[in-house]
Length: 422
Image (cartoon, rainbow, N blue to C red; front, side, top):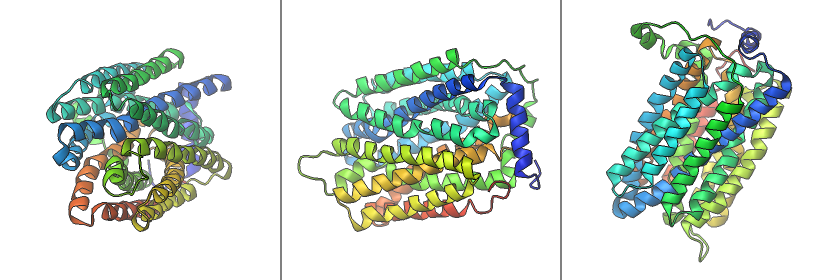
């Protein structure tokens, strides 16, 4: 796609693709969005429940003396699997002409990976199990993410992305509450979260009424490799990728260490344990995220202004990182969690809508959305290593908050060069 294409051309292409692929009625579309919301809710329940509570707790139990470094290593290596599998699975689902088998297969395989993770007794096996979980979950995520550009009209993308985006606050809350309730018996927590994903994936596949599309003809491997990252050659898609990568890197550099921050940096009230504190902070953050996801998505549709919401929310996400530095208290963390939830929820909802409008080719939607998901998974490769080094050498957890905030502000600035979307 040429950089000179207008947003109207992009919208028309997206609407045309939607009409060709999914001639469904409005009621069917509402049911589809509900199933997508459930699928995303289950995905984030697993990601946050395991990543924020169960995995750090497991690592702390297996190697308490080196927990920061070990968690960083496991997180970084496992994110390599996420980064690779997401676009690869997206490209394969594009080629097969079906999303359902990839959604169902990834969901069931994730349950198996969770069962494995719940049975390990060494750091090495924990790392292997989480790598497998990241791989299977990103097969599931790639195919699920592609359903929106496949089957939702361009003029409804903000609303659809907001409804689907509710999966993050709702799923995150459910996941953390499940994880906190089962922290004493983590095997149960792993199995419950894996089962939630399996059920949601099977429901979306069985009830989503996916229209059949002819499989795409085989493409030589050399050509596939040459075109795999071709979307990044498009000006607007490239800047959207950069903006999301910076914001996610800043966010997860901090949030991946939330349990340890509450243990070693924040002054908690007497009797409040770090896992219990996470179980309180997460619903606070997720409630704020729910409000901003819905309001941001709907208003971005009504005003046809995506960049304003994405840039402002990324900037807010960076600025609120200062709060736990100047006030490393329980009150400070409550305020930080609420404001950070507002910022991150609005960003993820509206940025997803923005990206669907700058996809170079509708027929490669899953592959290119998978490439975009590298901006979500890729920074998680860097984040654990960056975070552990900042904690060790650049001012501990205060330095970590400041570095995370700076990266988020840079993510806001990266949205400005996008041309074809307001």
